[in-house]
Length: 388
Ligand code: SF4
Image 1 (cartoon, protein in one colour):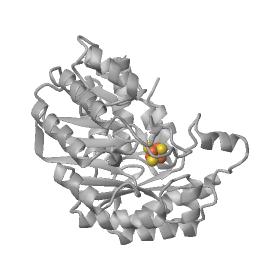
Image 2 (cartoon, protein in one colour):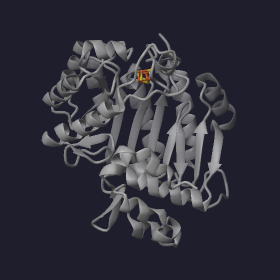
Image 3 (tube, rainbow, N blue to C red):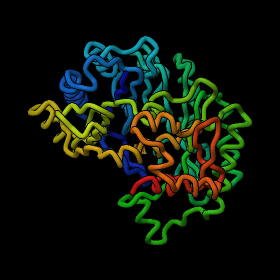
């Protein structure tokens, strides 16, 4: 069992808050890039842990994968299926931006084999969409949501961003109400982050934008959870909410230590045991591809892969990762699985977990360890505490 991520690194313009590996472009070498993706898949598909593995989830992310022709996506899926058989019930997601899709294009993607659509709506308030530098309009978001259902997408997710400068609680309430009115299966809601190196971060430092007060951001985080829960969307992870059975299986694979292969410029991959690069530590290896799309293509053409950064995990690192990835999910971390994997009780390796529990940062539920009410608000610090 494995997951496949395919990175399409182009967008029509670059949003000022984005720190993904994306490039603003009006045209892109679609067929040449797709050929590199296929070659890269061929290279890894013969090696452990991917050789012989079936694909349970596939995710086309970016960038804006909806810029690619449905036929290109279809050929990639056919090729993947020849190399690593796609499970009959595989979840195949494609990220789309409103304004780049209409019903015909979405129907083409559906026919190509994509069965889950993730739409980058972000907000239904025009002035906030503008503050985020998104190039689509609110009406285009509404039309894309309608068209997705009309095109046959039975599994639909939408992304929202909150804690945008100038956003009020009323704005957030309106966003949540409108999001729910489209009856998506899944909602991801992220607080706006100010990543170093982005134009938004520079604006913050220069005083051109003011971030939402921390207290308001906390209230918004709680309001998102409450409103979505009232509408039948359980928070199964810090920022992800779903109707029962509609949790994103691809995300879960990342958190559950499933091997995943990332194809494309800047993509990340993970092999939890055996390494495709030869004997390793046995505790897993992570690697990242060359970020520049044309250098990525050259590397794949000459070497079959484009891995430029590789980290063999030491036992201590793997134990920390296993914990914080497990804690991301609402179902929490299974101490028995930890002990089985690493041959040591979690309480011995991370004795500070007891202190975190005493401070309401962690709590025990059904034999598992989950983030407590205070831990949810400072999740990143809790996660960081599992790294030495
Ligand atoms: S559309 Fe998405 S990937 Fe592209 S620049 Fe904006 S945030 Fe980044």
